[in-house]
Length: 464
Image (cartoon, rainbow, N blue to C red; front, side):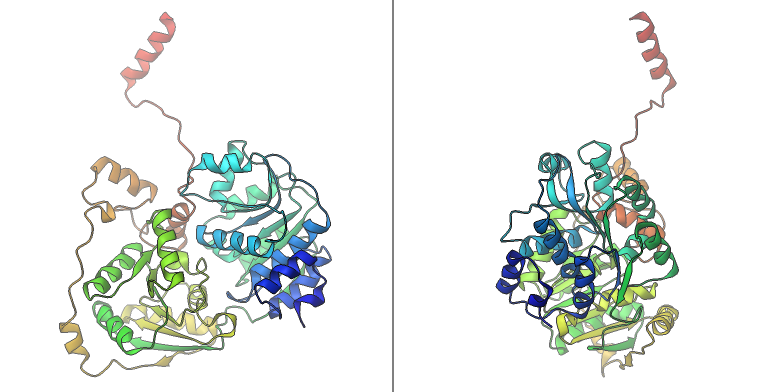
């Protein structure tokens, strides 16, 4: 089967030809005909299977076949994504597939000035890709309305749940028009996600291209048992002995990712870290350098497990394995994309063995055990010292009051328990979700703590 067999709009076929896309992936083969009929769809597919094209191509076809201008401050198609990076990638794909059309595409997420986004939405857009927090901020400021949405797409629904966006999703659902087409995509489908799907979908067609929580067949998985303090030496050994084109290195915490990068740079190995404490500009720079091949190593937390769509990732290295089995699937899904082969290497400390057992039970696979290399103790002793951290990293050297405020809000610095977690647990994921979604927290109304101030204000009011 080829894309031309779907009967898509000529301008879309022209764009696919320009990208040299000829044969659809399994999820595309199953989803596109259903969506062209206008049916609701629940898609269960592993990451890297082509879900974005599966929902964007028929949606573009619908809008081109039923042309109408978007209403001011409105959109015809709304796509919700859990992270900034994924939102940007979805928007770029829509632009690529609609490059020969006049359909407009906009993204809204935190970390960038909201006023610029308000101006972009003033005239209305055809396709809006958004993260939940900034979307609701714009709605609260009356800069956006959802009553004209024809197509609603919820992508990576299970990660939305993990990041604590469930209440935001329910609020968005109430603002959407009753008559619309709904597209629901998730890499896994536990009971909680199935219940969420029922809130959005009406008589959906379910398509699934792989069993739930399975790992890609073309990924060669291995595991090495090592003490936590010796993992950095093992990482250096792997990087020196493996034929690596591009590698994603995953940690469970933000500060852990920064430590790995400092150790790598201490050994003269260039790498970037990407996580929720980084600014949007830093995250964009890191991704661009990684995507272009300028930097071959990107150290990430679980928040980036599904927000990074980069071809040519040959290795995924779990410096710390996740304590949520599904996250393991999403991590290693960054390699072996589009039919390529990949390598997934996991370092497991003694206190992580229970996590490994959970992963093996859920994925129904067992990674190949690999022993520590000969002379490993010598490698540990000769490990280069890490570069010194910047003075401002982790809130050090900052105003103590500002540091306490950041910690309370989960924005970095010395945050409370779980605040360093980057999506592994729901409590930590909520904090990280705020950072990922640009710290789109509602402004609190000022209330003076000093009673004398309040009394004085009241006195002024009476005198006036």
